[in-house]
Image 1 (cartoon, one colour):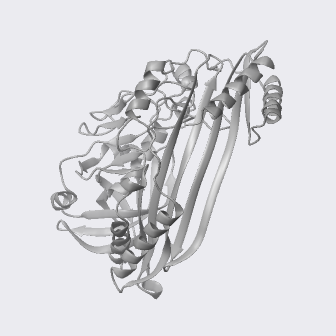
Image 2: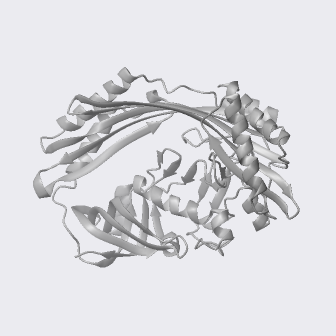
Image 3: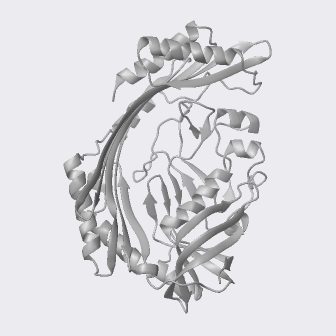
Length: 456
């Protein structure tokens, strides 16, 4: 981990204070990544991206209260840092004061012992790939998919990528810390069938270290099987039905929940859950957690974008909404404690987001869920984004499989699912035992009753 990045962040804060800022915080980031694309056993592209930059947020005292501004730069030379400070201070001096502005001072930062314990428990591990290894994995993955069936008619290519990111944060209350993380991924998209009957699907795997990725052959076979099973897909008549979202599609349900729990959206009355605090939002068998140090999650972090210590928390307990996700500003306005969910970019205001979000699994296998529900639809793909975060209204295109008598009887496409997210949450009937991680989110299959399905 580069202490140089921390030095740059500290230098920015010091320069801002010397230039008239009463408070300041800064980010310094170095991002390096490589990717390779192969198609039909030939190398299509090799890309490398290296970027670095700094971001500064400065607060100034005005007769009306604190005003602040932020800006970023890719110039990390001494003069570049001075120019950035001058720009941000000038912007802050002409900005309107915000009576609810929250400067860095007073944050619940991790202690030195916290940081040592974290480093011991979560040592940095390199991704372990180079271009040759990534190319070999991509070629193997694609070949396994193409060889799986003579009905696989084309490949849209296999893609392998790896990289690392180093981030340092410093604030005017003398807190400074940094961390480094690595990632690797492998994916393949295949086409089955020909002409108007063609079907496309994909498979992927992602992990911090390449050695923990799923085997390339398995990813290739999954992409092939997902494409093949949709051959012959046709429409469906409209109905009200129980719908199963398979795990990788069910992550979108968690995503909608996270957005609705965003404290800033709640403040602006832009969330359909604004008035649902402590209410039963899900059935009582639903438990959802946010864990910033889960061994299987890729969103691990000791502190958030404001330097606030992150803590594991139950955000849905026995179906009840226990609280909203906040940064320090939203927490102040909502009269609650910051939850350590600030997301920070180089510029703009603070955002809010989860670390590792996980919906606890149920006890049924997907096959048992099918048998118990009898008739319904298994959704394997969603299209479009017809979701209203203010009202919760939900309408998305979908494809998947018709379920009759507890069995998958045929693939379907061209259907639209419609409901309201509040109703969808409340109408969860089953949770599968197939909990699966997708980056920083984990969910099992989710079965939701009484959804409207529009078709032919």
